[in-house]
Length: 206
Image (cartoon, rainbow, N blue to C red; front, top):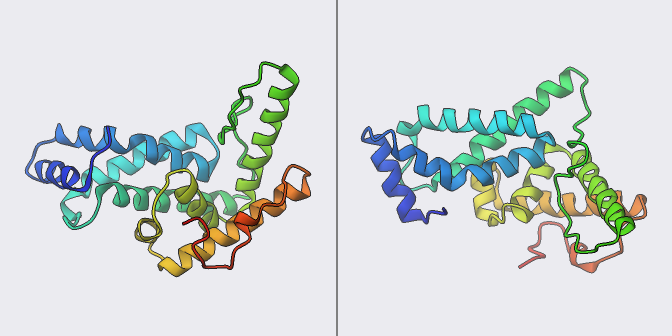
């Protein structure tokens, strides 16, 4: 159940006034997007679930500091983004650099309408390579690309979620697309497409 900006503000005010049950409305409205962002950044379902729960707990305890002029959904993205970055930093320090997807269920799904087993196998293999390509990106580039392509946020919303300038966001997305395309090309799974070859920092998918 998606909420528009006015509905979000109304529900947030109810929570601030002590209506604890109202927070569930906010949770239901944004839980799928929060989980999707965490999953694409971390590449692990259990970690994504933990981060999602942590993000909502932090949001609930800090709801009194939330500004009424902002979107709650964008605030949730920022909380989730920061938690994911923190986890990735800790993982890197422990030299646990592998962020493999759950076996048999690639996180970035590719539509598979073919009844032929060999074609399904090709699709699964391609999805795994895309997942691996995403994992190869620096966390900030990966997050920007996921927010744009998966969560379908505007550049302004991504900027608000990450604390970066819009120009920086556009640059990160451009660099992420180029790096992912190069990764797929190097594995023989990507056909050159001029859509992702625009100037860095430009809005190539307007």
